[in-house]
Image (cartoon, rainbow, N blue to C red; front, side, top):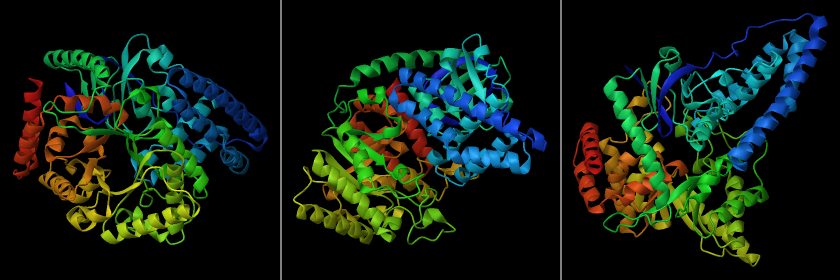
Amino acid sequence: MLVLKGIAASPGVAIGPAVLMPGEKFALTRQYVDAAQIPAEIEKLNSAMQKTLEELDECEQKVLTELGAEYANLMSTHKLILQDPALRESVCKKIQGEYLSAQAALFITLQELAAGFDKIKDPFFKERRNDIFDVGKRLVNNLDGGKREFLASIQKNSLLVAHNLYPSDTINLQENQVIGFCTDVGGKTSHTALLAQSLNLPAVVGLSTASKEVRAGDTLIIDGENGLLVINPDRYTLANYRKIQREIKKTESLLKTINHLPVVTQDGRRVKLYVNYDPRTDNKENKRLITDGLGLLRTEFLFMNTPVPPTEEEQYQIYLSVFKRFDMRPATIRLADLGADKMPDFPLDEFDQDDNPFMGCRGIRLFLKNPELLFTQLRAIVRTACAVPAQVRIMIPMVSSVEEVRHVRKAFNQVLAEFEQQGKKPINKIALGAMIEVPAAAIALDGMIGELDFISIGTNDLIQYLIAVDRVNQEVAHMYDSCHPAVGRTLSHIIQTAHNRGKEVSICGELASDTRMLALLLGLGVDALSVTPRMYLRVKNVIRNSNFEQCSDLAQAALLMGSSEEIRNLIEQNDKHEDS
């Protein structure tokens, strides 16, 4: 038996025989053609592009029928990539100028396009390179005559092992009897992971060597709950996981029955439960969730992959649809957290590329240096709040000082005054808050809390900066530790400081979706959590089965402990007690 640790991309447990995805044919060598063959290569490229477009049309219709319009937009994105004139122009230029075959010219062009995404550390944007290669793989296949037969050859329920898996492959897994998959590469924000969650396919990604360790026919357990791949499990492990499988199935069915129930602990503690929302990946299942509102709308996507900044009108239309989606419930919009690994394509007035961008000009620092971006976004939000009776909350990212908060407050008041001069004002008061993710802001929160209406803790960056660990650096990523004593003590300090001034504290980082850590977070006194839609009912269920007084005792005990191991053991013991 061998156990590999990866990233839990889609929850659930799948057990079955392994099938291995054949190696990618993308490792193409430079093949050259004679000058006389160039017209034929160009014609072959045109035919392959037309065939690929027809396939994407078919796939888009299939996704539309099975998953809804939101996911069909993914295929629309692939069609835009295929129809980008720059793609065809670059490939033709390489065929005609360098005498490359159509396949080789296409491969080199795709590598050039993807190189820009390789420089980005943010996992969400880094994963977008997969979309480029997904389209490219279809094109190469059609250049080779179209022989996509592998998935169709699977004859029984199986677990797919691949080095990488593209979204268009993922959508076809279930009809080809694939009941779970794992990959060497990938992250939890990839389109492949999001599709797997929507299709309820257990998945683990980022396993590094799975495709080398597994042989066809091996018995596998894909543990999408804990990010584990078990190869050829012993009898005890297999029996234990079959039991877990039955319990998960039973729990998933029961979870749907609590959707309409309040989020309250057994001893009456009310906790607000929001969702992190991305309008590009919304779906029917998400819309059925009865939530307390929107806890985090990341707006960077509006500023990426565009040659010019989004206009007030463009942003207004997006915010209008978001506010309508959440009706009268609170909707939190985070000002664009640009900079570092999320640099827009358009030029900025005052920006020099830093050697250490994560510590440099990003978040609100970048907006204050480029005030037209800040004012445009604030005007779009305020304009929307004047149009619909939403409970709008604006959140400032990467705050490190009270001066930054005051600058944004001043700009916000200036925008409000402009609208008042036009005879307009928000239907409901707009709340202005900050994301606390920099240790300096956490420690000095008492100095800025009076300027804020609420705060939300961004645990991903806060933990990273507290422990000085880059989560995407494979040399130190294992040191990223949410059980570190500094984490609990810092969270406690933030919550107590805000509560002393009567301000609400929510947590919107990944920690909020980690059901094992909920007892600690509840015990520390957090008022609200914002979680991914997929984890919403699970988190709700854990809260409803928790006792706040017992959580408080656990949190107080954890705050007195001096090591991660002690705190982790305490949390594990609590989990066992809850399960017994």
